[in-house]
Length: 162
Image 1 (cartoon, rainbow, N blue to C red):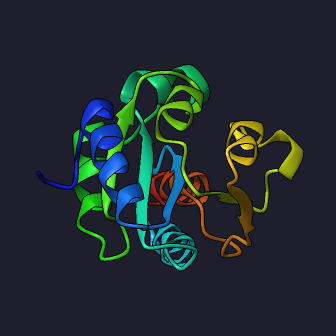
Image 2 (cartoon, rainbow, N blue to C red; image 1 turned 180 degrees about the horizontal axis):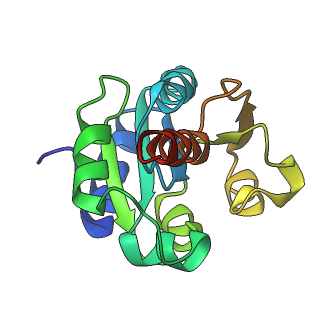
C-alpha cells in the first residue's frame, strides 16, 4: 500500500494500527502550493503520535471553499508532494467541504489544526474527544501561506508586465 490511500484503506489500516498500540494523528487542509509553512506544521503535528494521516481537500472541495480560481495545484500533485514528506504517513483525498466524514471513520487519537482555528470550532473535536482522543493546535509559521505566495506572484507579474 502506498501513502496516498482511499478512505476504506485508511480505515482498514487504522484498525491494524490501533491493535499495534500506535497513536494516530490526523490533520487536514487544502495544501495549495505546498510551502515551508506547511512542512513545518506537518513536522510538528507528527510529533503528537506515531502515524500522521493528512486529509486533503479535493479540487472540487477547494473550489467550493476558496472560489473558482483555486486550487492552483491539482489534487494529485498536492497529494504527491504531501506523500513524499517524511513526516506524512498517509494522505486521504476527500470531496466534502469539511473532513467530518473522514474523522468519524478514522477516529484519530489526536486531531491537529492550526492555531488560527478556535479550538471550539475545530471540525470533529467532539467526536475525537468522545472517543478518548485529544485536540491540539499548532502555531503557524508567520508570513507563510499559499494566499500570500499567490499575492506575491500577482504583484511581481504586474511589475514585469509594465
